[in-house]
Image (cartoon, rainbow, N blue to C red; front, side, top):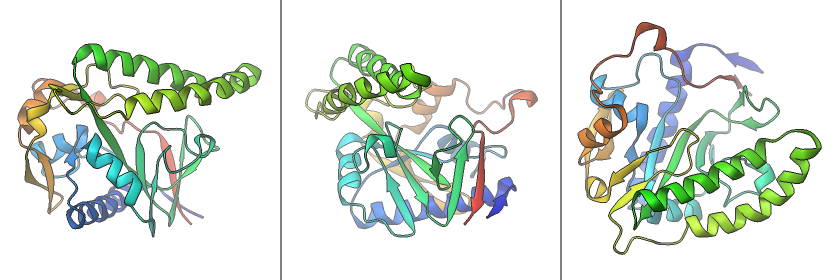
Length: 250
């Protein structure tokens, strides 16, 4: 294997995955949105935040479910807990991966992915923060069960998988009717990740690395909710990649 050490090359591969994702969604009438640092990069930098090493997108639950059900793997493989067994995939959200690469994350170096983009579902929340906190608390509990070590970890994983199936059924319920908010309940750093549903009712396009991709119609409000003054650069000592991994060509 040949290790990929150049950040620009990692970003190039991730951009190719995003282009494939955008092409598939357009052909299948699915709506998505650039999210988090990727959305911030599109607005502030017209591309990657210079030190960023990942791409994030999100989808409303209805479209996310259609993607999970219908996407056909080729060079790019869609990995999710719905498509794979839990012990084959340990994340609550989906990842679209490049099968010509291998990626090993530092916190679980024995678990093999490819270079990927993250695809997060936005859950419909009828009661805003109350619904969100219930789902987030239950996901974090399962996340703990799935990362526990030793004998305790083995026992908790068995219990966790049973509980997980119930949690995912709850998370997948269609709460769209009468919902006022949406939120990402899957990310480990998602606390407070709640937005008005009408901010995502329509899309517009923004340039990212020379290509047009979809963003929420109220992308400024989304960024303000997440980052505050999003046009202000962070301190220099914080300008570094957020994800610790090693990537290789097969």
